[in-house]
Image: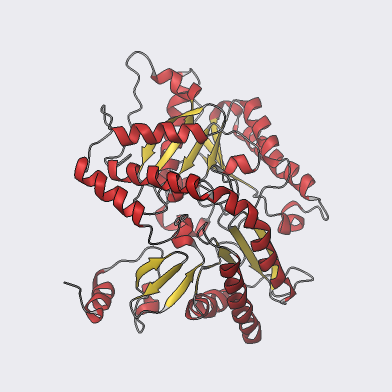
Length: 460
């Protein structure tokens, strides 16, 4: 029996604790409630349609309403609904691990399953710590990550996260995390204090700050560098040319693990199966989640280079870490069916072919006075908003509050576009549609953004 709309809305109002949400915003307003999805669109409880410009949360790669993914889940639940990977295996987890290893670069052949991205990051840090203890370098435990980077909410992953406002209420966190500059070339002048750096020069400068941090901390204390192929928080910072090649050199020189956090960037988001492949580097660990099942069931993984598994092969060594639902049979079955869709429909090729079209539609918005920069890769783009295009002057805290939360977030949604208006760095709008989207959806995104951003400028 279907609950009446009023009952659903009241239950949401009275009992749900929403994630990363100011509940004060809903004291006088109902909570937006999504009930259905089809292709690149979602529908709310009142039947209104919205373009899903964020793929849920950088997740729904194959689009909404894919019956074959639901059927794969149902079939597996009837056969084996649950069994843990604690000293036992089950066929779907084994098959999925092998399938993922076929797509990974280099010798990243070992798959440690989790239920989400933050857990995958937590796993990678713990593994790095234990690995170095087992190979006789017990002081190597610190991690280096980038400013404004988001790596998850567990205590370790949150420590690696470079957004102070997300961390301050939970201090003290896990010690040993160090921050370096990110790859936002649009803000390179103010980050470096050196005007006019080319993207290549800035990439080298930013990568060399990692080497500097390792030297400052002491190379015998640093275990890993965590970096997203395209940094999410702050608004889609792609790497300048040569950045990751230099980062790889630095990690090799100091015997530091390079962890590619691809919770967003894996599974086609950039047009490649794994994000590092887009920028031609091979990490030591890939952390991933979201798009592995297109969101139809939760799963994540740390995919690990074979040499890091070596110390765990013999004797009584054990990685004393795990999750009850890691590699869940139903989720693994859905992930396999999702990868089948990728191959059958050539989703990677579709993204690669359409990336220039999507980029062109978004860059056309640069004629608006409020649009300072458009950046990203594949189907993952950010639009940075400014007060003054000539000086790149950004908004102060009060202006950003009024712009992002006071107007843009609800105005874009009211206009029929679900996306993210974000102020974790300078104010940005982020777009990450399902990988099945094409020019029709890009035109709709551009039209809504143009209308809403024009109105936003009038209100400033």
